Amino acid sequence: MSLQGSSLQGRYVAIDTSDSAFDGAFGYRLNAGYEKNGDFDHAYDLERKFLGLSTDFRISDRALLQLSADYSSKTNLADPLLRADQSGRANPLDPSSYVLPPRVNRRDALSPSWFRHKTEGQNIDAKFEYNLNESWTSVTQANYSRVERHGGFNDLFDIQPNGDIGYADYYVSRGEVFSTWSLQSYLAGKFLTGDVLHDVFFGASHKQFKDRSPYWDFVESGGALTPGDVSVGNILNPVQPPKWHFGPENDLEFHTTIKESSVFASDLITLNDYFEVLLGGRYIQYRARNLSADALPQDKNAFVPTGALIFRPTANIMTYLSYTRGFEKGEYAPFYVHNANPPSDAIESEQLEIGLKADINRWLNLGVAAFNIERDANYVNLDNYFVSGGQYRHRGVEFTGTAEISDQLTLYGNLAYLDTELRGVVDPTVLGKRSEGVPRWKGALGGRYAFAQVPGLSVDTMLSYTGSRPVDAQNSGFIPSYPLWDAGISYETKLGGTPTTFRLHGKNLTNKYYYASALYQGGLMVGRGREVFLSTQFRF
Image 1 (spheres, rainbow, N blue to C red):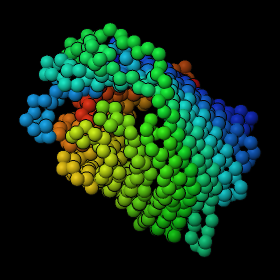
Image 2: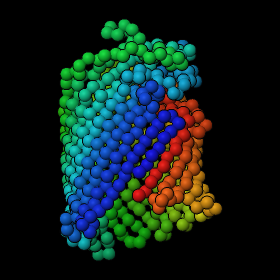
Image 3: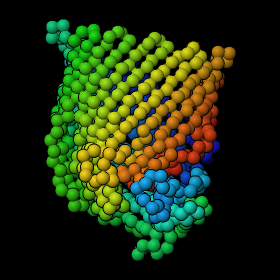
Image 4: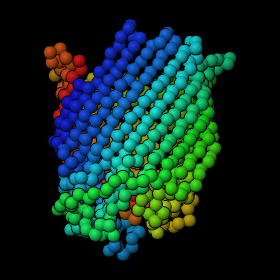
């Protein structure tokens, strides 16, 4: 059982228990929890509940049936995206003249306290494994999930240096239901051809996704239906507006159906002690209908291969070269553009990666990887239209490492460099520009120290860094880079024979003001301020 409270009026309780019976023929795991931050009168306030149950039925020595189900609900204050007034810029594409909103009190609710985003989800899984013999296993899996959303999205535009809001809008989905069911079956096994070992699996799958979407509500300050101000007025001195009554839920606008059937196979080939080759692929039949009220059908067949060459010069060093392709549902045009809601075509991508992982000794582990990713692009142009075209190219390198300096001290860290670029477009305002919201540098350095003099007592710390990020496809502005410092202290002991852990930790201990993300062509989300947590965990 876990109990936790925080300095920002957070409280959390959870239980996680498991047991078995009938000599291990039946087992279960149950987890449940409740979390609440504040009372919906401050930024980031939320309420969350969850319940999950997993069971194992050992039917025979060869057959295992696993069933699981979970339920969750979440309600959070629909914190707004902030957009400062950019009308005074001589050149709207000059990033040096980009205007950030004035700094706010991060505890202030900048959207109406009654304007919330609610989701409720259920998930059911079943998995049946049957060992045909020592080398081959049959696996069949089924899943059903359902999410109902009563979602609210709030944007504040043309914010002035004194905090005055130019105008605001609410974009609300009430009663939208997403559901997915899937079925997958495959055989997995190993066999030899001469001295070559094959570790294979092959099978088929089918997935169906549905989106039951009613008409969305759009409420705008000063609009024909809302002549008054529906915002908090000023982000530096917010005043709660009267509650807006949306009325009964809207009629159904469209009912999306996406069917995806595929066959797949993979073979990990061990040539000798040094070399392995991975060959695989998936053939996908994609059929999408009614992606929006007036969207055309999308029918596509795609082969998505994957492959890798793995070289192990020693037992503790692995190098690899891999290639993969991807295929996924397209993106929707944002609500604020002139051609709102129409979807793009399905998105294809490919990735090439080379890497090395080394366990230098039992105290030092290192990894390095370099990659190149190309992905179909969608963006919003200067005329405020959603455009599909070109490709994003993301090239980068990532380093990871863990070092046990002593029995008491462990250090760990990672560093990533990412060079992004939009290619294959004729629009000069976006050609060659960096990807929206993606930093060039990102890293973290942390450590843990266990006190030998006081068994069970340890301290830990983490310093992370995120580089500056473009706010839009044109790179007309950037949100600043920022470091964050987290730290904590833990004590493991026993209370009445029950293993117990007490922990005190803080996030963003320097109370750094930063923007956590840039979304929807320049909408900025303010990051959380300092928060200190005190928790206790009992392991019965």
